[in-house]
Length: 320
Image (cartoon, rainbow, N blue to C red; front, side, top):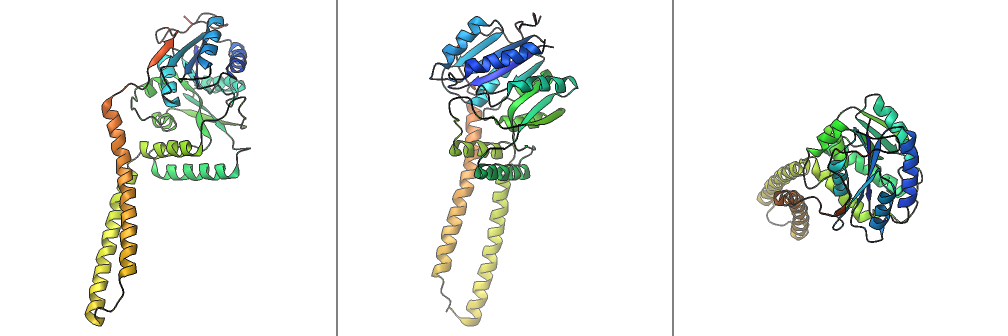
């Protein structure tokens, strides 16, 4: 079996050499031919130079570098497009995805699973982050058309036919967690302990996590739009009932009730609700706008990649 390791990188110069040494040991221990594809996502700290040096010393390493930072989703897509292995492993370069799990992934893949998913525990995470994460997954699984598991990310092994299925999904606004779930296939999940970063700092601030979560909520369903219809219908019924009540009170008691506070509350409440619903509609329209442009997901500045489907031989021997 031929194996491809896809590694998105963004400003990982402090850890990339240690990462490569660690994964090389694990890959060599599998006795399978392999390649490693590093995707530099427009780093500014020398990551490209470090990866190029690694590739010059290791014939099993291929790399490509984007013209700017296009995001991790684009980096994973680029790696998958150029992966030629019978199985592909996606993992981060910061050593938070333990290379020691590669052997276990291959073992489960050998049992017939098309996706082998490493699910991290939340040990060591702040209580607030754990609460928000679990609340988000509860919400998205109530709304989205696919089921997402808490703690499951991009660290996984994917079979060749599952990779081919992913590559058929060409949408511009990509939410890989949902795409992995959407393609289906037989999956195996195992847990591993949370690991701290070996170097650098995380780019996932709370605002970025919020935007990423919003992408996931809107990318796989139209229920927010349906909710706008239901909410509008409910408010219309309430307005009709209130109008009937006003007519009855006016007919029986005359015009004596104060209405200023009620009027202001209704205007501000309905105005805010309308802005929220317009925002939801705008998010969907914005996605249509970007899809209609049909821009490429990324532009490559530098690469040593061979054509897709050609897998260099790792220490275990030639792949083809």
